[in-house]
Length: 226
Ligand SMILES: [Zn+2]
Ligand SMILES: [Zn+2]
Image (cartoon, rainbow, N blue to C red):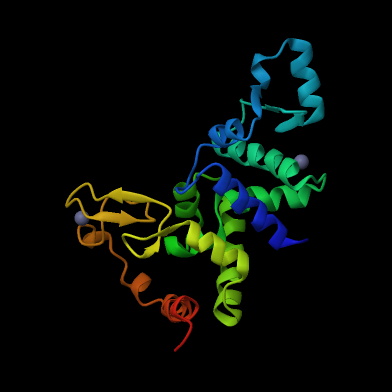
């Protein structure tokens, strides 16, 4: 599978639709790209049966994407992005469409900068199923290993720049405010910042050497040296 081609396609959608925050609204992206979403439950009985016959989740006919709205919300998000994968990659390959869906919903770089190493938290932060979160976490580990060893690829750099927040000088895909002290939280799903969250604070997450290694490697790509 040509992973770079899939990453370029994901980046292309982020750029075209001006997506700078995750998770995004899948319906919005599809509308921006000129596709219409139709619920299975809005079809006639005959149409509904025909839809289920084609796919339990979703399928595309021309510019119309039909989806099973009885499924769980996170599964629907994945199915819609799977269909978009078929369209933008112009492929019938199911594995490629799945890889596209996972990469657009939870890109490895964003997973990396979330610092989340737990499938359930990752699933909540990116609004994806546990299955997709597990895949995204595994893919992120491989990605950060390779990025540390060989540096960022061309498409990685494009994605990094796309989500780079100049004001805060960092990769940002989500900004929230601490409900207690108003500190701006980056790439987090937690309602409180580390300062306010002390009773639940797990010291292990701050002594993760892989993260330190990565910061060093990142400075090398960014500043091209030592
Ligand atoms: Zn498919
Ligand atoms: Zn706080």
